Length: 213
Image 1 (cartoon, one colour):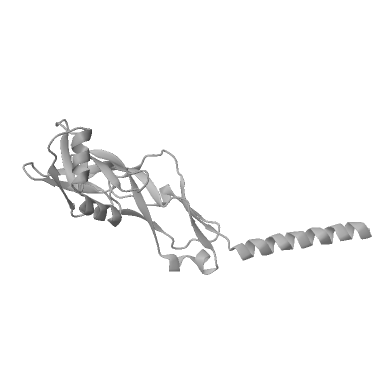
Image 2 (cartoon, rainbow, N blue to C red):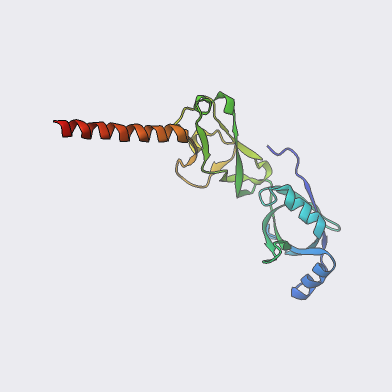
Protein backbone atom coordinates (compact mmCIF):
# COMPACT_ATOMS: atom_id res chain seq x y z
CA UNK A 1 0.00 0.00 0.00
CA UNK A 2 1.03 3.58 -0.52
CA UNK A 3 1.94 4.85 2.94
CA UNK A 4 3.11 8.30 1.95
CA UNK A 5 1.40 10.55 -0.56
CA UNK A 6 4.02 12.28 -2.73
CA UNK A 7 3.95 16.05 -3.25
CA UNK A 8 3.13 17.63 -6.59
CA UNK A 9 4.21 21.25 -6.81
CA UNK A 10 2.49 23.87 -8.94
CA UNK A 11 1.81 27.61 -8.98
CA UNK A 12 -1.24 29.70 -9.72
CA UNK A 13 -1.52 30.68 -13.37
CA UNK A 14 -2.36 34.32 -13.95
CA UNK A 15 -5.07 34.56 -16.53
CA UNK A 16 -7.09 31.87 -18.24
CA UNK A 17 -7.83 30.89 -21.79
CA UNK A 18 -5.65 29.89 -24.73
CA UNK A 19 -3.58 33.08 -24.66
CA UNK A 20 -2.51 32.59 -21.06
CA UNK A 21 -1.78 28.91 -21.70
CA UNK A 22 0.44 29.75 -24.68
CA UNK A 23 2.30 32.32 -22.57
CA UNK A 24 2.93 29.67 -19.90
CA UNK A 25 4.40 27.30 -22.48
CA UNK A 26 6.69 30.05 -23.81
CA UNK A 27 7.97 30.45 -20.24
CA UNK A 28 8.83 26.78 -19.93
CA UNK A 29 5.72 25.79 -18.00
CA UNK A 30 2.86 23.39 -18.55
CA UNK A 31 -0.59 24.89 -17.93
CA UNK A 32 -3.24 22.91 -16.12
CA UNK A 33 -6.47 23.05 -14.19
CA UNK A 34 -7.59 21.65 -10.83
CA UNK A 35 -11.29 20.89 -10.47
CA UNK A 36 -13.76 18.88 -8.42
CA UNK A 37 -15.02 18.57 -4.81
CA UNK A 38 -17.50 21.39 -5.34
CA UNK A 39 -14.80 24.09 -5.43
CA UNK A 40 -14.06 26.54 -8.21
CA UNK A 41 -11.57 25.36 -10.86
CA UNK A 42 -8.04 26.59 -10.26
CA UNK A 43 -5.75 27.44 -13.17
CA UNK A 44 -2.18 26.32 -12.48
CA UNK A 45 1.26 26.11 -14.06
CA UNK A 46 3.86 23.39 -13.54
CA UNK A 47 7.53 23.60 -14.38
CA UNK A 48 8.00 21.70 -17.64
CA UNK A 49 11.13 19.75 -16.64
CA UNK A 50 9.66 18.98 -13.23
CA UNK A 51 6.48 17.53 -14.75
CA UNK A 52 8.40 15.61 -17.40
CA UNK A 53 10.50 13.97 -14.68
CA UNK A 54 7.36 12.95 -12.78
CA UNK A 55 5.86 11.48 -15.93
CA UNK A 56 8.98 9.45 -16.69
CA UNK A 57 8.92 7.98 -13.18
CA UNK A 58 5.71 6.18 -14.19
CA UNK A 59 2.29 5.64 -12.59
CA UNK A 60 1.53 9.36 -12.85
CA UNK A 61 -2.14 8.83 -13.70
CA UNK A 62 -2.72 6.11 -11.10
CA UNK A 63 -1.12 7.83 -8.12
CA UNK A 64 -2.68 9.99 -5.45
CA UNK A 65 -0.81 13.31 -5.12
CA UNK A 66 -0.61 15.98 -2.46
CA UNK A 67 -0.89 19.15 -4.54
CA UNK A 68 1.01 22.11 -3.12
CA UNK A 69 0.17 25.53 -4.55
CA UNK A 70 1.45 28.64 -2.81
CA UNK A 71 -1.38 30.61 -1.23
CA UNK A 72 -3.70 27.59 -1.16
CA UNK A 73 -4.25 24.72 1.23
CA UNK A 74 -2.71 21.40 0.23
CA UNK A 75 -5.22 19.15 -1.48
CA UNK A 76 -5.18 15.53 -2.62
CA UNK A 77 -5.56 15.16 -6.36
CA UNK A 78 -5.34 12.56 -9.06
CA UNK A 79 -4.42 13.24 -12.66
CA UNK A 80 -7.32 12.78 -15.03
CA UNK A 81 -5.42 13.51 -18.21
CA UNK A 82 -2.20 14.77 -19.76
CA UNK A 83 -2.51 16.35 -23.17
CA UNK A 84 0.53 15.92 -25.40
CA UNK A 85 1.91 17.47 -28.56
CA UNK A 86 0.82 15.21 -31.42
CA UNK A 87 4.27 15.37 -33.04
CA UNK A 88 6.73 15.57 -30.14
CA UNK A 89 4.58 13.60 -27.64
CA UNK A 90 5.50 16.09 -24.92
CA UNK A 91 3.07 17.39 -22.26
CA UNK A 92 1.12 20.53 -23.13
CA UNK A 93 -1.65 20.51 -20.50
CA UNK A 94 -2.57 18.62 -17.35
CA UNK A 95 -5.96 18.04 -15.68
CA UNK A 96 -6.06 17.34 -11.94
CA UNK A 97 -9.12 16.35 -9.92
CA UNK A 98 -9.51 17.09 -6.21
CA UNK A 99 -10.34 14.11 -4.03
CA UNK A 100 -11.40 13.38 -0.49
CA UNK A 101 -9.65 10.46 1.21
CA UNK A 102 -12.96 8.60 1.22
CA UNK A 103 -13.66 9.16 -2.48
CA UNK A 104 -13.99 6.00 -4.55
CA UNK A 105 -12.27 6.12 -7.95
CA UNK A 106 -11.39 3.78 -10.81
CA UNK A 107 -7.71 3.21 -11.56
CA UNK A 108 -5.58 0.74 -13.49
CA UNK A 109 -3.34 -1.09 -11.00
CA UNK A 110 -0.24 -3.04 -12.03
CA UNK A 111 -0.11 -6.83 -11.52
CA UNK A 112 3.10 -8.29 -10.07
CA UNK A 113 3.80 -12.01 -10.52
CA UNK A 114 5.76 -13.66 -7.71
CA UNK A 115 7.25 -17.07 -6.85
CA UNK A 116 8.25 -18.04 -10.38
CA UNK A 117 10.71 -20.53 -8.88
CA UNK A 118 7.85 -22.32 -7.10
CA UNK A 119 5.84 -23.02 -10.26
CA UNK A 120 6.42 -26.64 -11.47
CA UNK A 121 5.07 -25.71 -14.90
CA UNK A 122 7.78 -23.09 -15.40
CA UNK A 123 10.46 -25.57 -14.32
CA UNK A 124 9.20 -27.93 -17.04
CA UNK A 125 9.72 -25.22 -19.64
CA UNK A 126 6.28 -23.66 -19.63
CA UNK A 127 5.80 -20.01 -20.46
CA UNK A 128 3.88 -17.46 -18.39
CA UNK A 129 1.54 -15.67 -20.80
CA UNK A 130 0.31 -12.41 -19.26
CA UNK A 131 -3.13 -11.42 -20.51
CA UNK A 132 -3.54 -8.36 -18.26
CA UNK A 133 -0.48 -6.51 -16.96
CA UNK A 134 -2.85 -4.00 -15.35
CA UNK A 135 -6.33 -4.41 -13.89
CA UNK A 136 -8.89 -1.65 -13.49
CA UNK A 137 -10.03 -1.53 -9.87
CA UNK A 138 -12.45 0.61 -7.90
CA UNK A 139 -10.42 1.86 -4.92
CA UNK A 140 -10.58 4.32 -2.04
CA UNK A 141 -8.57 7.48 -2.77
CA UNK A 142 -6.84 7.42 0.59
CA UNK A 143 -5.74 3.80 0.21
CA UNK A 144 -4.60 3.23 -3.37
CA UNK A 145 -2.53 0.04 -3.81
CA UNK A 146 0.76 0.34 -5.67
CA UNK A 147 0.15 -3.12 -7.18
CA UNK A 148 -1.73 -6.38 -6.80
CA UNK A 149 0.09 -9.70 -6.52
CA UNK A 150 -0.44 -12.94 -8.44
CA UNK A 151 1.22 -15.94 -6.75
CA UNK A 152 2.57 -18.58 -9.17
CA UNK A 153 3.23 -21.18 -6.46
CA UNK A 154 2.18 -24.68 -7.55
CA UNK A 155 1.10 -23.71 -11.06
CA UNK A 156 1.30 -26.43 -13.71
CA UNK A 157 1.31 -26.18 -17.50
CA UNK A 158 -2.21 -25.39 -18.63
CA UNK A 159 -3.21 -23.63 -15.39
CA UNK A 160 -4.98 -20.26 -15.62
CA UNK A 161 -4.93 -17.35 -13.16
CA UNK A 162 -8.25 -15.51 -12.86
CA UNK A 163 -8.97 -12.28 -11.00
CA UNK A 164 -10.76 -14.30 -8.30
CA UNK A 165 -7.48 -16.14 -7.62
CA UNK A 166 -5.88 -12.89 -6.48
CA UNK A 167 -6.37 -11.49 -2.98
CA UNK A 168 -7.23 -7.83 -3.50
CA UNK A 169 -6.36 -5.11 -0.97
CA UNK A 170 -9.07 -4.06 1.45
CA UNK A 171 -11.57 -1.72 -0.19
CA UNK A 172 -10.53 -2.62 -3.74
CA UNK A 173 -12.76 -4.43 -6.20
CA UNK A 174 -12.69 -5.09 -9.96
CA UNK A 175 -14.74 -2.81 -12.18
CA UNK A 176 -15.69 -5.77 -14.38
CA UNK A 177 -18.25 -8.15 -12.88
CA UNK A 178 -16.82 -11.43 -14.18
CA UNK A 179 -13.95 -13.76 -13.34
CA UNK A 180 -11.64 -12.64 -16.15
CA UNK A 181 -8.24 -14.14 -16.98
CA UNK A 182 -5.04 -12.48 -15.73
CA UNK A 183 -2.46 -14.96 -17.10
CA UNK A 184 -1.94 -18.59 -18.05
CA UNK A 185 0.90 -21.08 -18.10
CA UNK A 186 1.37 -22.25 -21.69
CA UNK A 187 3.15 -25.41 -22.81
CA UNK A 188 6.64 -25.07 -24.36
CA UNK A 189 6.56 -24.60 -28.14
CA UNK A 190 8.85 -27.57 -28.64
CA UNK A 191 6.47 -29.79 -26.69
CA UNK A 192 3.52 -28.56 -28.71
CA UNK A 193 5.39 -29.11 -31.97
CA UNK A 194 6.46 -32.62 -30.93
CA UNK A 195 2.86 -33.50 -30.08
CA UNK A 196 1.77 -32.34 -33.51
CA UNK A 197 4.44 -34.46 -35.21
CA UNK A 198 3.42 -37.50 -33.21
CA UNK A 199 -0.17 -37.02 -34.29
CA UNK A 200 0.89 -36.81 -37.94
CA UNK A 201 2.99 -39.98 -37.63
CA UNK A 202 0.10 -41.78 -35.98
CA UNK A 203 -2.23 -40.73 -38.72
CA UNK A 204 0.23 -41.92 -41.38
CA UNK A 205 0.60 -45.29 -39.65
CA UNK A 206 -3.17 -45.67 -39.50
CA UNK A 207 -3.50 -44.89 -43.19
CA UNK A 208 -0.76 -47.46 -43.94
CA UNK A 209 -2.56 -50.13 -41.97
CA UNK A 210 -5.80 -49.42 -43.79
CA UNK A 211 -4.04 -49.67 -47.17
CA UNK A 212 -2.47 -53.00 -46.33
CA UNK A 213 -5.83 -54.37 -45.26
